[in-house]
Length: 200
Image (cartoon, rainbow, N blue to C red; front, side, top):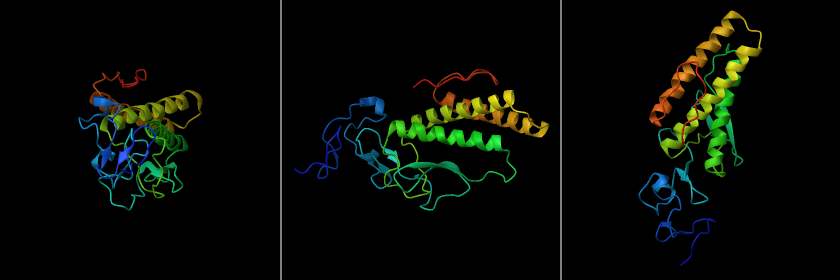
């Protein structure tokens, strides 16, 4: 009975499932403790057997959208940030804020699955499998961007136009983050209030 060894959980190709029960149990977000790659073997990778991660998105074609700001494979087993769709006149602070937002997603993806970029073609989007993980990452990424832009407002000499763009972006990101906090059943702070991490 040839098994594939995935460290934590051996997989049976004949049974098309893990041999060991998922150690995460119900907290994995599923009642099937033997599921392989979230039952999506063509779009999901799970090299450790503990955390399936999308290779690409279920809703996108194989061709990535160059106008999207997202995390993509680098073609070498890693992940990188794609900053598409930014206006050519976007100020450098807004661009850096978006970059930090997406870098936070990379950090969160790799924390869930250190192999998230393995086998992913360059430029192909990489997503979380579980909505709750994605929502948590959106809160983390929004907080990183908001904190950076607030620091810019405190420390940089800005034109009135740039200052207003940054204030508008902060307000936009607070609303965006608060939507994910509500999904996570965490009470959002008042606008301009302190950063509230989402409860796991």
